[in-house]
Picture 1 (cartoon, rainbow, N blue to C red):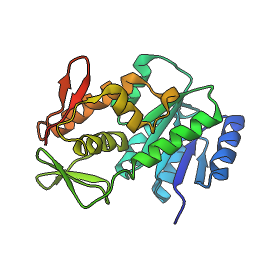
Picture 2 (tube, rainbow, N blue to C red):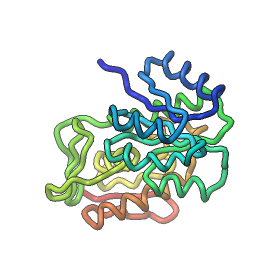
Picture 3 (spheres, rainbow, N blue to C red):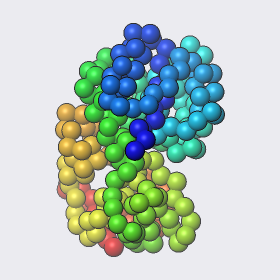
Picture 4 (tube, rainbow, N blue to C red):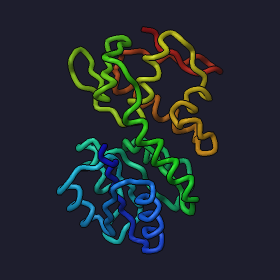
Length: 221
């Protein structure tokens, strides 16, 4: 089995060195860029399962290369020194799968990387249906009456979770535990709120995510 390919975009030499060593020790194939220009070149030359993007770089910000990567199906994990709700919401609404605030522990970083990559391959079976949505777990894709849904890895995992529990009310805690592989220390509750909002917009009524006030969410088959 080929290793997951990761693009690391980080200009701080010490941070990059530590992350490269940790990722390669875990068996990932890693390419490293120090600038947006280098990142764009690497993105054009190959495909990646995950991009770890520093928010602030010498020639721009991580989001400058985000669209090209996402168009190729790459999951996005942002690194940032800013720890505020607005920054987090903005990153997630732009389609990022996760973000982590500096300074952070390597264990936490690796857990986040693993969780994002696992969400890309979650599920089994031929197809699942919820409302007018058909999910193809073996391909990690979803369609609405034959038209492809453009979902981030996190949105896909959330949709798959609802499809495998039709008609069941899932609490926010249950959902977060599933999305983040039970790593409760790393859960940001606002992540779920933003993801639910984005998924509803993309579904556009094809499947109704019902809010059960004070409890969680439910999607009927």
